[in-house]
Picture 1 (cartoon, rainbow, N blue to C red):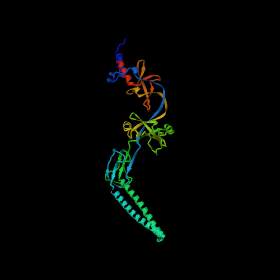
Picture 2 (cartoon, one colour):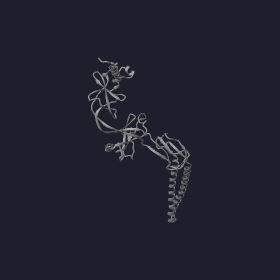
Picture 3 (spheres, rainbow, N blue to C red):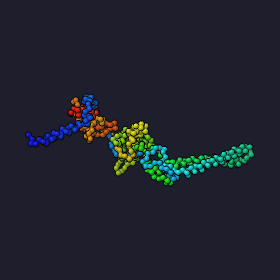
Picture 4 (cartoon, rainbow, N blue to C red):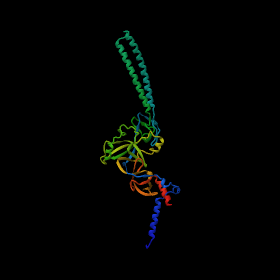
Length: 385
């Protein structure tokens, strides 16, 4: 007999409490009536091939970001938006005093009226001189002079019309508008300041479309550069693509987002042997507003994300996320055993774009796993009571 049986009794109590805690569920779930184990759907595991992905850190940035500058001279009369304000395309950002521009427009219109009057007079004289020339009562030299004056007056009308259009443009330049919908990032001028053509007044960016900027290892960049992707276009022709790129995904806030096209820089960083790439998120302008609010609206320029790039294939066992019973850092499955399910701990691998998760260890091909891990846990909990 043992001299002191207390340590053995204490170890047995700890083991029993640990076993119960592994299957512990909320009281509301324990009191519910789960379906019998025979009614639960199971999946037979098998070895299959799937793409192997490389995860890289990336930073989101806005594709549309620009600096708005003044195109005419004047005093700022009104500033309608400030830093971090949201603006819509076409809204007036800054209003410049247009007194000088309107005066120049009036002057140009007056010059146009004068040119039209002179042109009308010279055209009348030319018509009369052409009649006199046909009657041999006017010399050829005088007719040529009247023709030149008529042509000059007609050209003066065209020049005056051009000045009027230019003056009208200067008036419209006094209303600095937003080129697209977005957010004001910086404001460089104050109310009452004098601005000149070319002087920056505001900078801003659009919340979408977005792209991820990532440094890709040179070996992986070489593979990407050889891919003949129909969605890839030159950076100088930044058209919007609505087709998804199956080999690249963006991961942010625990969700995966499809991409459309990517652009590799034509040079490598000699310090890190990497190539910078810009990866555009799939534009969802053709989706519904509900999809946009539930999808990408919380993605912000400047935030860190992960880029998932396909690099070859790997063979393994893949299961849906519903079949995995996650408790903190511990993942487990419910394997069909006789008339019930047996808990087994496993080690997880990469998550595929379709939501399936690779099982690295703890499971073999041909075993039957419960698709609904929570329902299987409830059955086990009822059987232990």
